[in-house]
Image (spheres, helix red, strand yellow):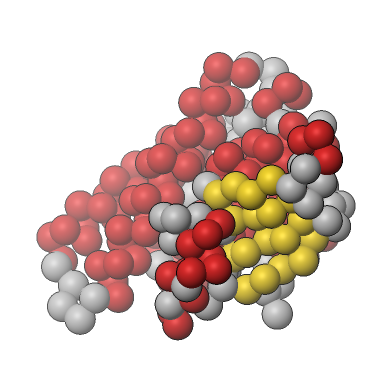
Length: 205
């Protein structure tokens, strides 16, 4: 059994989707970040950085409980644990790694910055435009890539797709205009959204 401590953020969504897609038994322990629950002592004991998501795998390596944070690391851990959706099935592993890290390290933080600007009392339009143009550039590269292959990491669905979907579902919810004009991304998004595991992963109750 795995305890998932998460909110319905990009990072939380991608891990919840992975758990559903892998058919792993888990309990969702919702972390209300707007109420400051991620700063409570119990959660900080799991992740001192105070960031969601975090998991506790009660059946970790050697049968011992394992606590870990960082959504990208959790996805990779669960892929190793189950033998599903991981890098081992990728046709081009170096390219897979590059794309996976781009989603986690470039796209996610850029979108988070845009959200922070949009939600501020006095959004600074030049800064918002700069980050939106950067994010649109990433989307353009991905749209071109998805014109030649089915999914983010190659032909097979992988943790790269779950990571990307978590990012883009939040983009569509908060800043939908950024997703306009990318036909290949739209095709990929619709296919991912139709997966039963993805639909269950989006449900935070």
